[in-house]
Length: 411
Image 1 (cartoon, rainbow, N blue to C red):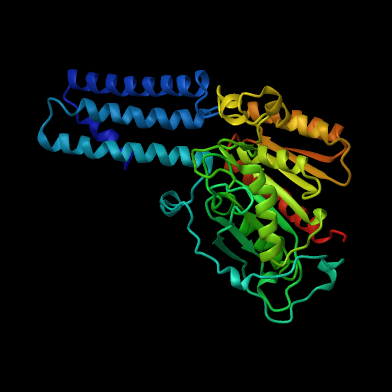
Image 2 (cartoon, rainbow, N blue to C red):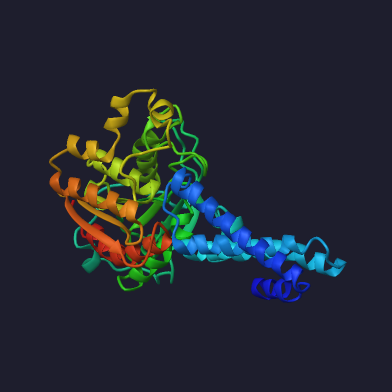
């Protein structure tokens, strides 16, 4: 529709001055868009990532279309003005859809307008006593009743009892094996999206539920339980997974959330059965919390994480009370050095091949983790950037092996 409208606004322009005016307006719109991408993305780094050529192209095309429409608002008949006005939201929507395709964030409009498309899951049905997971679970466990074809995804409220952190509802995934009588104790994956974001993104954009359902279908319904708590508080807030004036995010994620999981879900209670996974800001959290708490997590997946936690120029002032020492201590490399040597900890670092900045971060933290004694792996996703295409590439290649590792954990 956008292409047809653009063609109409061009072809039907009065010749020759009207056509020249319309073409110039479109070129000015495209040039202004590219300048804005350069200014906000490259100079001011507002988004914290490098904008890809594809994203810049779609923004330029949308603004070029708007330029065409604006040029047709003057000196045109009334119906042409109406068509020009209708064209503007169509051009904007087409550009947004193109950018979304580049980032791989949303599959449909519902996911755009709904921050959490999942229903509340009654916790009374989830109670279980945490303890030791049986050894050889994959080989020995079989359900006493027919298994559901798919796992269940829903929202739960995890109280901030110790931290008083203002967290949004978490989203959890229960595999088929967790939904039958006499369910076994299962391993846990704690997962974080990036910022801005909501916990649901790990299942809508990241497809964790679908990937683990496919694994469970081949392993007697067995797969890890996934808990995606809120590490942000609000989409536009970044507490940096530390305790600070912005919020006691670290205490919430390492005390309140694990306590709730143990008291409400039938899970294993050994660190080798717990993993922590994150993307972008969530990836930074995964290495901060996983590296800082080996007593909780023995498996870490950091996808496109940052080299240091940051909220911009006032990071130290707002997040660390002006203490440079406290800020330095919260950096992933500092955390890894402070807890060296690690024993029986596996860490996977990943980034998109087109994501020059974050692939550099991944290599740096990968090297430090290897030096600290972790069993490490570096994954570079071909042809992707700082986007959910990278996440999906990594999930498809790591979650099945990760599930087998966690289900095979020893007591």
